[in-house]
Image (cartoon, rainbow, N blue to C red; front, side, top):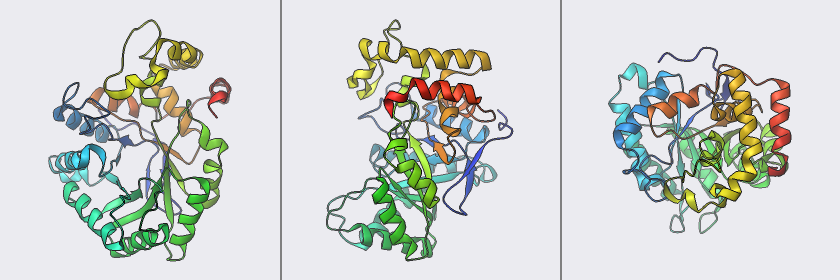
Length: 325
């Protein structure tokens, strides 16, 4: 498919890389603990998702060393090698460092980055994020010093964090600023069914500091796709079925939101998922990273760009989901 015209874009941090306002989350790529990798979908399905995303103009792929214990990074590395260079040179890779207890030195950060680069088969990544704000033997200050050094070394294009509170984001921003390095992004859970970043200071602080919000689980792990209804009797694969929101009672409670997404989508010839993703893009300074396990899902996600909900449609969805703030 040809790239979607007039893609909305965001900048990763102040004066950073400009990318389409929708990325591809790859938590499910290689993960068989939470997801159903190897059962419901295969490497060839994921390769097709990678190709379809690039073909549609989506260039940012978000992964982590912990996803599939390195398998997600390996798959992305392999897929990039299998595509023509003129296509993959546009791909923007973001990965994450997990602050494990035994990583107690700045060298351990460099070693973890080296391992990720090896799995990805690249010399550098556009965005390197700290997966969780955990403090063990390596302080946040020393962690930011190590990351700043890697920016200057050229192995990281930009530094990001993930799951950081407003204050933790401020502290990271300050430690990096002392080295002349900006904080580019904070990746947090954000969707119509999880609007806490709007009320806990994360969105406001990010805007103040020029930090871009990467929204993970932007479709609430499938709840906002319209696929799951009280009548459908569908059960999500993997560990998601443990989430009470997927129960019949949970789905019944969500139906006003799902019905609104369906009604807006029908008027605009869009799917409920595309409507839910567009609502996030419309918030500004937000880059949703929905997952895609096959080409169809990747192409559908891309259809969330190139258009915009009306003020009334945005207000309706915001009002319906006020309880999730």
